[in-house]
Length: 591
Ligand code: OXD
Ligand code: MN
Image (cartoon, rainbow, N blue to C red; front, top):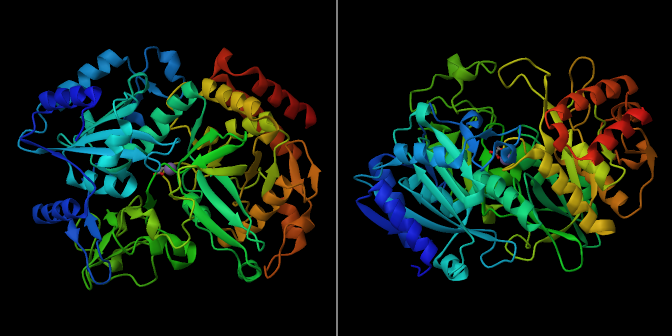
């Protein structure tokens, strides 16, 4: 498949370490994929679903000890601890290689070593990068075929270059005691052992496209961000692009695939999806910031996805999709999860494969769920009814606005615009979300998650903030405008005041109007807030007073917020960029 000496050398090392019985290059062909699907069904690794209702769709169950990303077992292995920074687990590369090689040694015995050459981003795009994953799991191969672009062309494009990411995955014994997800950014290397769960083993995604790529972006002058990308088309047919970062459980996939309210659809407004999770962004020849989605599919959370909450995501799962840890509806050999519809299946197996009793189902008790709360679908992006025609083009789309957001019951207004790029970086660096009743632990606890990158930044986060500031200097007046949104303001009884979902389009329209200098705003201590009449409430059951209430900036709350940001910043010590310290002082003074 290749003459690239660096690839040949690494694969030889891997063979020697892992001692597989056979080696198979994955070529992206339908015939090879079909044979692997068949083999996985025969071994019980996957279950073939109803091929009339869900053609090309399969169900997989992971070990119950292995159902989510494991942040406490995720390491950034740089030469010095300082390079990994205060927000990452760190281990010296030498020590970690030794430990992981000891765990993985001989672990492919009796198995096939699958070699998956993949491109993150359209093959050959100047914004794309190449990786090679070796794995002993057919499930991983089949997921990689959906989530990335796999083809012999990838190796052609790579040629003799050494600019590719080495990805080693071994299931070993799925032993949580020896589970490690390790990034070696200085060596373009990722090693994942003892897991079979998507986020830990589809190494193109979080490990490469965020942790390794953020480090590469820092060194090479571009950005890898935990952001969705969408295009908003107005009735004149003009499309403007927005990139948005939110911590988990804030509706990123829903926003990426939003369906505008009816009155806007009738006028001719449309939303086009480019990506739902990751954006790679570079400065283009015209000086603007261009973004691609490096992925080729969606690895979405199933529970809560339904025709109303996200019609387009659900439609994306109807063909060629792998479901992981959802319930198996035996009545028609399809899948089910909490929130799909109101009809609890009466003849189903739960995500562990045990008979599920709907009579025992209690919404408040996650242990009674049919589907694991973090159950997933791996769906091809091309299935999405609103996928953008720019999705597969390598040039990327010019970003007009960057949007940050979080779940804040009271503090943050529905939307505000930062006062400058530096001020926007400050807003992103202080991003926070409140924990919900859905997760264990106290409700309403604020977790700071800068740019939604806390678990994904592959180097010192203070350097990452500086990199953002440096990118702003390079972009100058061509820089996207930076905004913050909060769909989650509540009244005193905890009821949401903003309808969210498709109605978020009303806010996106204000954001784009601001980018074009078309909308007014009120200057507050934290930034520019809309004039209430500029948020279009047509057909909404919402009065002006409620809208005004969610646009307020409360001085006392923000004074407390400023104190908390100061505390958050202490972690970074002297490395915190001065510009951000100044921004904090400006905020305090303005309050
Ligand atoms: C994801 C995540 O799976 O952010 O996308 O956890
Ligand atoms: Mn994500």
